[in-house]
Image (cartoon, rainbow, N blue to C red; front, side, top):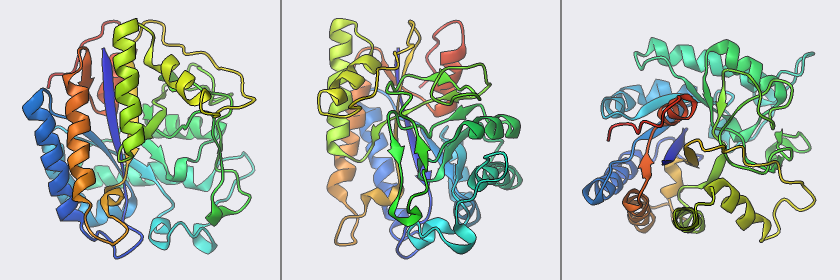
Length: 315
């Protein structure tokens, strides 16, 4: 079985906070309806910042009742409203043990979600895809069992953070799920946290096409999707000089994790991009029509991956 996990980094837009929020979520509902009419209804993991919990908690409680999932997006509180201008109160800092201050917000936001009556989140995604070996222990201690932050092969910096290294994931070029190691977050270990690496951007036409084509080839040839994904990007010059890390699929269910923000569907004219919302519905429907391809929340997919038997979540 192959599972598509869609993870929303649920944060305020850089412009007027939450502008077009209602219109875009109406568009999401239409996209999910298109997929449901064809075959299966998607379920989404909404990883929320502190401000999202405060401003939109009641709205997401309604989505949770529709079997979507709530998780944590551990941005430094307030930083996303300044276009990721990390300075002053929002600056990244490491303590003497190499722990990133942003990582410590994960447990704080998790508690806020619990206090808001939105359940106890299992899923985490970091702000701006930051990750360090020390992140694993912080997440495990806080009670998370799933992380969706790692972008395979990436050494990532950001204009807003200068030379600060947000993540160094060059030790892993395969997007297959795996249990994290506290010694090296790029290699499988024995922690309680399952990593679901990023395969692509849900709103990007190219990434949508790539996932469908790889799924179709995998179904046709029996080759794991993770191996085909790595082969595809290597053929286009990515991961140059980085040795393959191995798929570690080992017959387990395959999990394709794609991320998005609600504001990805605001176009350059600062209007709702209805075309991209329609294309999202078509992509989700195409995935659902493929044999052996299903939708799941991040925690559902991780639960299936760690179980002895591949039992597809009920649609």
